[in-house]
Image 1 (tube, rainbow, N blue to C red):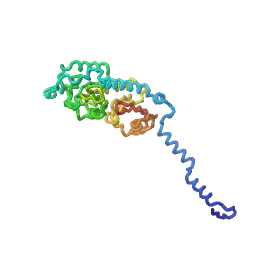
Image 2: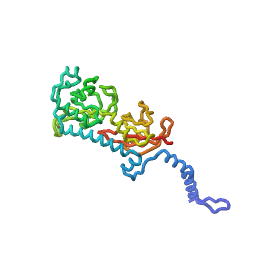
Image 3: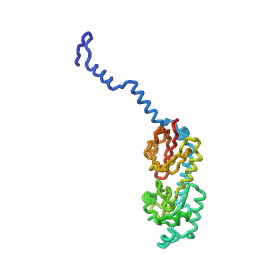
Length: 310
């Protein structure tokens, strides 16, 4: 151990002196630490991890709308699984042989064919306002029928949907598969479609015989957001897994339908399965954004609530 003499002072252990200098270098001044802490608090309003999910949603003001959305999605998924388990008439498929002439003229079977399945599809639409259309496709994507016949089937620009992600996904996974927002071939409007595989029977090695397709009614989801909004300055958004708008209730009526939300950190956090609230700058305005993911088939929808910081 080396000691060095300092005039008027007892010899100092050089190892001890070096340790003191190292500590001074590593520990920042208290004012700098406090400043960094303030920045973190101002930009991360994440909720206490000790609270339950329901409590967090209540704090964010999203409990009611989240509960209603989850209920709607559960109903849709229950219908899908009933079809997979052959507990409705969709399991006996097909009844009518689809011809090339039918595809060209009707984009599927005529409106007066396989009435039993068409009536069941109509009943599903009546009982479930979250559905815009109900259709059946062969495994290769050819349309068997779709209800309502007009415009869903009769006005469609194609008779085969084998190129669509929801058809491909249901074929590959053998499970219900939800598309992101796409453009409807019958109306040209944004839509999302849930495809459900239909098998020949309930055995493990049963053959895939068709697909049941549910078009989701964005207008219904928008009305749901509107009915659950209780703050005149709050904007409620429902997004797909790409950040594309499904429904948007903006009480100020200044929403921009061409907006992309995938760049928001709140969206990214929700996509990773998190829920919470943070502050973000949108168009030069500081906004508090609360976010929560909602599981739907193999993917997630994202619910955002935006409120300006006055």
